[in-house]
Length: 78
Image 1: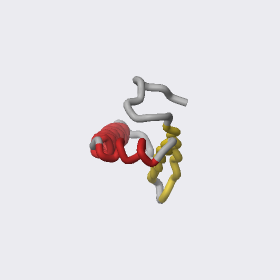
Image 2 (image 1 turned 180 degrees about the vertical axis):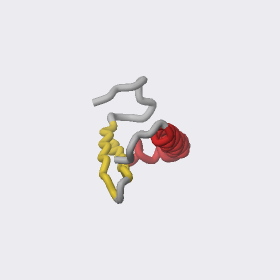
Image 3 (image 1 turned 135 degrees about the vertical axis):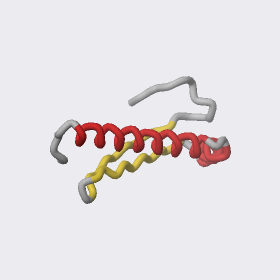
Image 4 (image 1 turned 90 degrees about the vertical axis):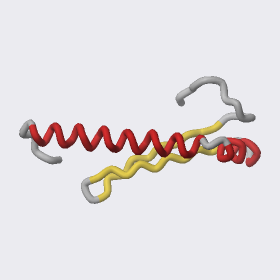
């Protein structure tokens, strides 16, 4: 369990991350479960979803660039 700064929404949230290989790529499913609908709705209204999506997009770009750099150095694809 990871703990970050104090939550600004009521209650706790459980984050589940499941990586699954699909066609040579990894798909990542992240689920956040909140104690109440009120907490979930507050988070959705905050715009946090857009920030999280942008972070995952940047991570995908970084991983793709690292993979390309590895291929240029003669590494074989996995």
